Image (cartoon, rainbow, N blue to C red; front, side, top):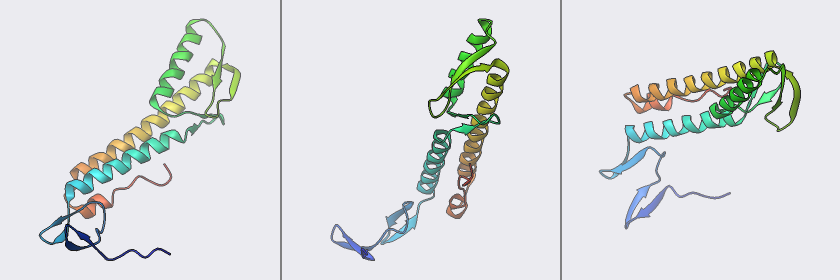
Length: 151
């Protein structure tokens, strides 16, 4: 077990340990900085948003797909090309890089719409949380804003 001291020396001055990463040293004590708390919370929201996208999305057809907006756009481009070429099916590559051959275009459209809907839902949640952070007037309100564990 590592013992962490309650105080440390900074430029010859003894200070208590920083309580959290949104505190600043001012007038001989740690003070809460609302702007720093907001910046840290927005950063945590963005990290959670990216992690949710990186985890992929499983469609109602049971196929797990990459979930970023660029992935949806690439899938849409491939779908459009298959449709414009008069094809009835297409090959898709899933989150695990497994191929699915001869997927009917109707199923491919369903996969694209569900994956796109997942992205829009996560993107909307991220924006809603960031807006809540911006509107918060107290650190306690900022600290209460969290990315949901199930997203």
